Image 1 (cartoon, rainbow, N blue to C red):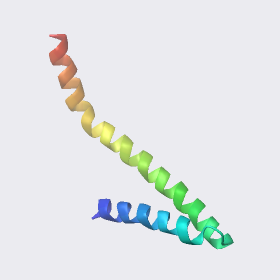
Image 2 (image 1 turned 120 degrees about the vertical axis):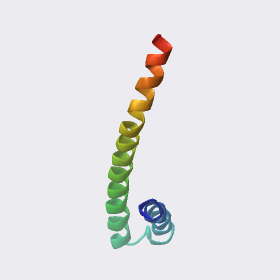
Image 3 (image 1 turned 90 degrees about the horizontal axis):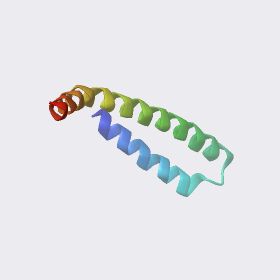
Image 4 (image 1 turned 180 degrees about the vertical axis):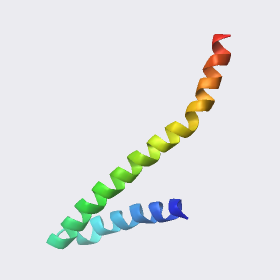
Length: 65
């Protein structure tokens, strides 16, 4: 469910850019959403990296043997 909301937020952000980029309030919303979505993307990438780390370490141990 969270993944769906995240993807819809990106689509909404693109829609706001297309339709409301000339309005001052639209520019503020675009900036705030860009910052929030960027922070969420970085956190998700770090969590994915941490989730895959044990698998990668096991794989590299097998290569060293």
